[in-house]
Image (tube, rainbow, N blue to C red; front, side):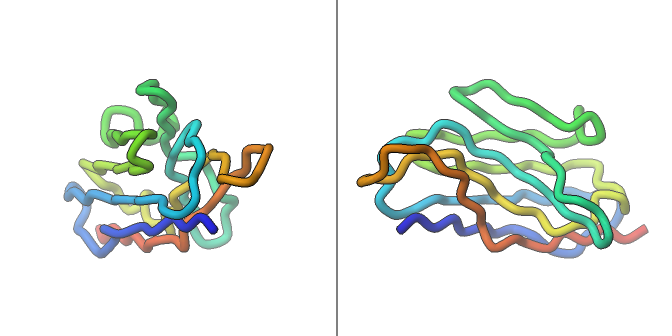
Length: 120
């Protein structure tokens, strides 16, 4: 069984910062990528940032403000969010593309989500 546990969400004023953390645990054979998605009310879930073997990818809306970091070998990923805007308000989900022990295929796993609210 693989679990992803997130922490670090909360309420912040516009212009402020938050840092999200995510740790994957369980019978993990190999991790290929980790990332963060978000879903605002009434909108589809969207990719915020992802990291694979040190290479990063960001949504256009967060480039220059958010920084993803982590270690696939340690199954951890972080999202440093600076200069937050009200439109960043959403539930943020950690995601991992990994292969579990006893499985021959890769699967996507999700955390439970953490609320980020940015007030104007």
